[in-house]
Length: 171
Length: 86
Image 1 (tube, chains in turn cyan, brown):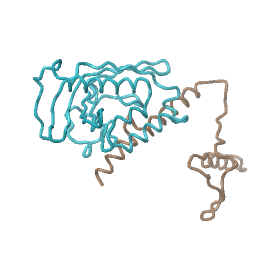
Image 2: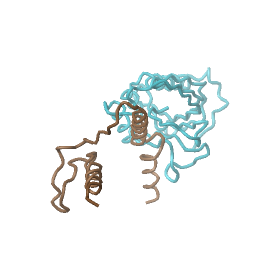
Image 3: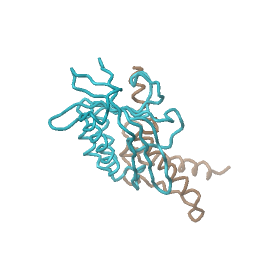
C-alpha cells in the first residue's frame, strides 16, 4: 500500500487511534473469553490472519507459516474449537492477553485503512501447564458502518522460529 | 504446485495445524495410558462389526477412515502364522 508514516503522531491527540485501540483491545477480550464467533465477525470477508515462521518473512505464499488463514480457514478453525471432539481443546485453554501501547504505523487514505502495531503477551493455561507467548501484533483495519473491520492481522512471535508445543488458540 | 505444497504444510504440519494438534494430543494420551500397568490389553475394536465386503480386492474393509480393521487383520495373520505347526 502507499502508506503515509504517522509514527510521530501524538497518540493521545488522535481520536481515530484511540478508537482503533479500543477495537483491538476488544478483539483480545473476545479471544480471552472464548467468543470465537464474535471474534470472527470482526474480520472482513477478504481478511487473512498470519503468524509467520520468522520475523523477516515477506511472503505467506512462498514460505511456510505457523498460521496463514484466509476467511474460510478461520471459519473452519472456529468451528473446530467449538467441536466436542477437538481433542487438543478438551479441556479448553484459559488465556489472558496483555497488549502494549498501540502505535499507528501507516494510514492509506485512499483505501481508508490504518495499520497499527502493539506488543502483546498471551498466557495460556491448560491441563496443569502454563505457557507464555509474546510478540508484536499488527492490525490493518478499515471502517465498516459505525465500527471497524480487520483487513489483516500479522503476529510476529519473539520465538517464531523456535520449537513450539501445539498451538490451538489464535493470538 | 509449490504454493499448494506450502499451504498443505501450513494446514497439516504447522504447530498450529488443526489436524496435527489433535493428533499430538491423542498420542500424548496414549503414551500416558501405556504407562498404566493395570491394563495389559490394547483395545482395537474401532469399526468392528461395521466392516464391509471389499468387492474389488476381496476380504473386508472399514466402512470409514478410522476403522482399526487393518490392525486386527495384522494380529489375525500373526496369530495364524504363530499357530502353524512347525
